[in-house]
Image: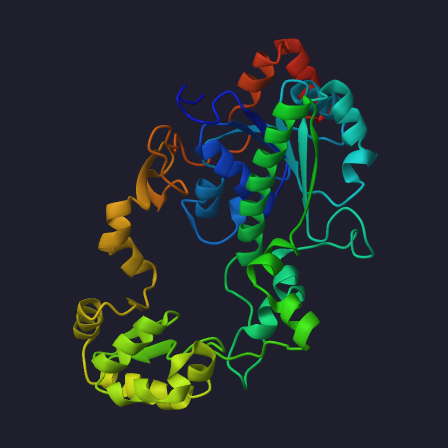
Length: 398
């Protein structure tokens, strides 16, 4: 199912999860050669199949999230479904699930039962709040993590409301963390010979990427406020409108870049001010710096602004929507957007694998497949006879 040179070839992953962190982690593993089997309820497919826009009745999000996965239908709460899952787990390296704590145990598929059939198994449990604590049994989604972690509190304009992202930010960060955790657990297995449980709470990885806010509060009592597009750590740092109605973003995290920007916009005298020598004190004069940069940018087109900044070796980027991304020459050079042939929808363009490896690169072998498309094939590989499969269907387990 994957090329022998793929770095994760030979690794089998059972994806029991839905919406979105767990499945995306499995996708990342599949992109680099793992054999991923997506297990879905026979009568309740993964909700991502119906999330967002569709074409010809086929959900497009699933084409991305389900890529490089074979699809199997299985009712884990049915006795026959439980038995099949245990047989699969016995020949599997990783199981990823995101049921509320206690659900697998109620079905007789908890860690003790899984470990009994496969002591080398890694079980990644991805939930909103983790496996313990007062919130563990609450329904948890990425939106709640974005709210609880402090992300929403620092996002938005100073006089505006806390702002949530219009996409699955916390879920995506948790997916990256889960893929990392799974590979770490597999490395541990190489040393100890035994598997283990990964307890991933979606509320935690996003808190990590928010930076040193807990440390600032612990040591200084400092609570980071909402600053819009500005930063408390440096200035000028903002978005600015060009003469032709576009927007650009400027960053001056490095002192030398801040100096180049002010020379470029015709205000070199500001670099001589005592407060200009550090990012935090520059931020205290953001109004003055923004006025200087914004006035210069507002009299030029986006192309003129970007060209001038590049020549000055100052940091700038156009504010792009997805139309711009699809045509951007840097993304094209990296192959960030790639084409995938799909038997249902033809040629699809989607994000490529997450990073490039020089010797054992990842690949998209196929886009998300129809619900249960590989059920018979997978069960045959497991050694189930045609009558046994028919009996499972009669039971409602498939």
